[in-house]
Image (tube, rainbow, N blue to C red):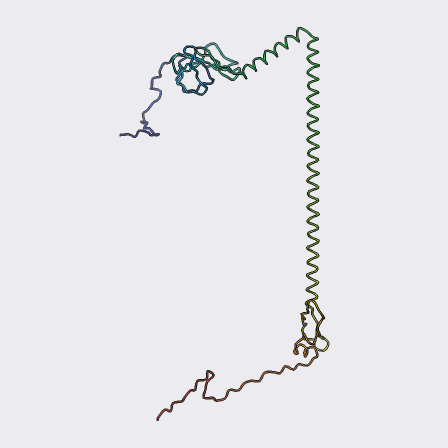
Length: 279
């Protein structure tokens, strides 16, 4: 038994699609399509409201003898959800919309009426200008004045925006300068404190070079001074060994080697007894 949902179907090697008979369909056959109502409408039979976006199983056909610059116009058949009366509407490529045709009336939409009124006014104005040249001159004068007013208002807005932008840039520049001044003052204070610390360190610690003429190998001696009070004598601060190095006399003598005596006690203080071995 074959599976239900398969994508690959068996095709015999001797299959010839040209032998399959074609179905004879009428030239303008209707197709069943699934669509949503393109606009809100009201049924003329029962008065039921059908909102925009409601889904229907509709029949679609091509309108014979009607087109818009070669674009086909399609007609759709649906049924009212309450009384099952047939409702038809068709495409309107001129206005990129749909037009109710039979069985229902389209609900009032103010934006559509505004567009229609504007179009009517424009056509009436053109007809009036063609009939009366003075009226056309007046209309052109009014239009030019309106354009000049619009340009003046636009120029005022641009000048205001430029002024606000300059004010904002000035404020930003002042803020940046203020921050730089603060940073400069902080740097100066930090540098002053560092210099004071270095001066204090130089006062507390001082290096006294030894007499290189008497002893070239004499090292440099570092002295630690008190931060406050009277400065003590150098001889009191320097150790005797350092004083001897400075004077060139070395009282340091080489340490004497210790000689180990034959002590029955070892370094740990334990007395070791020797055993006599009998021969």
